[in-house]
Amino acid sequence: MSTVKAGNSNGFLTDVWINLKRWLIKTTRNPFVVVGSLVQPVIFLVLFTEIFGGAVGGALSQALGPDISYVTYLTPAIIVQSALVAAAGSGIGLVDDMENGMFEKVLVSPINRAAMFLGKSLSEVVRIVVQTFIILGLGYVLLWFDTGGEVGTYIETGIVGALGIVLVAIVFAIWFTAFSNIVALVTRDQESTIIGANLLQFPLLFVSSAFLPVDILPGWVQTVATFNPITYGVDAARALMLGRDVQTVIDVTAFGGVWNTLIPSFAVLIALDIALGAIAVRYLNRASSSAAQ
Image 1 (cartoon, helix red, strand yellow):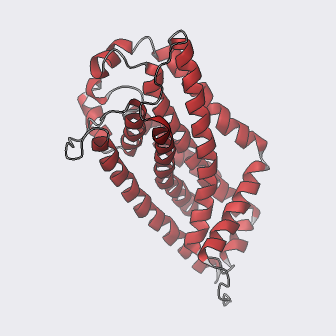
Image 2 (cartoon, one colour; image 1 turned 45 degrees about the horizontal axis):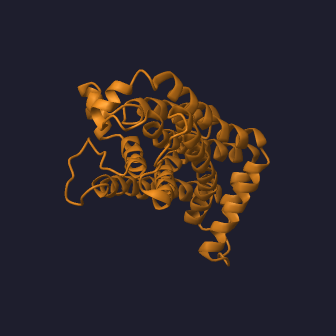
């Protein structure tokens, strides 16, 4: 038996706010998720700088100059990694909704499907913003210890650059949030969603510019890095951190300085956001049609 959905009396922004508030409440009611998502990037930043900092110092100096600390080089990568992990958790939360019956209740409501996806994505954005500021603060502390208390300029582009790094993390996370939701909608299984997200995110991290300059990586890795979205997210954040053009996978010289990295990186990430976001909304509409039958 089919049901007829009533017209939506709420505006688009109201629908976004309703979904955003619902997912924020759900997240805060699970302190393990909140604490884990905030502690994990801290652990990664400390471990990677302590374990790999000395080993890659020579290669880093050769690629970018002797004045670049591995702490400042790695901090943007950890920010992008934490955004990736937070985005991957979005699909897991959606499957949890499916398993407890809440997803079907939302589907038969007249709420706008694009607003449904956007509100859920914004709930992840809130967590990513908090994570990013924590990582930036911790990076400063680690650099202080690394330099013996003589940090100098931490973010070369200043407060505007710091806010720009937050924006990079947000724009980067949207495409993977969409991807994890697509996997959730296709599989409708929590374990499959976790495997699908992890199977993609961790290999991609190591075949990107996240942990080492692409120039010193094997040729096949450089090729993969050219088509790897993580490279563009890390390079954009790193360009703002170091105040210089760090893009090596494509040759762009038309904009000058840091913009040679930022403009193509944002173009790639925004294109992915639009494409995968549209697919996620399409799958939500398809799920709604099935629920209305």
